[in-house]
Length: 301
Image (cartoon, rainbow, N blue to C red):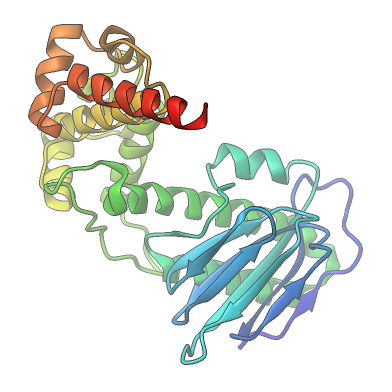
């Protein structure tokens, strides 16, 4: 266990600063007034329930992260038979909210992250960095930023493996991590996936992605085959179709053409690929959604 450590007064010159860090055996945590800074909770080996009044209650298990914003009341109750460790990192600074938002980490629920032990080791590095004294707060700020980047990259891989792309053929099998050596192939694959998630609406070709990560198309395809059992092109197409399906869920009265335009596909091609991926045409799905919406409207009225 890493004892609770508080850094003291923050340095206002830092866009990100470490407020506190530590770990504890799982125990009840009750904060009706919230916390003064953003908190990152990491669950290692245990399980419990996080509750935010007025928003919901979620089960948090091993290998998951939960981010709580400042001033938000919350409580954590471990399961009675759960034996684990809960890590916590308090982060302040003028830029922390925008950085976490840009990294896609501000979700109102716990979520799995790939390579959890790497992220956990980053947290312990922060704890040990405090031994260098307050004069090294600038270095600590750099470590915080690196931690956020690691979590963001790991989350992208976990999102795919946990249903970010609804296909039984796409599975998350990340490259084994190492604390000592960086894996160039793993880093290239993570960057490639991140680019696809960022630019799925653009006219993005696999060649563009390969050039951006410094690999040939053939080599990049081998990496996708190794970890997801699909080619890079198939991965990108399934991502686009999944995004279109999610968009249709949120816009039940939209047209097939509008859905195709959101992902940059020609309409007829989009219809064929959508049916191949999900077993029904997008038009049939729209009709079903409209019917459900009408029934809901009648019920409410």
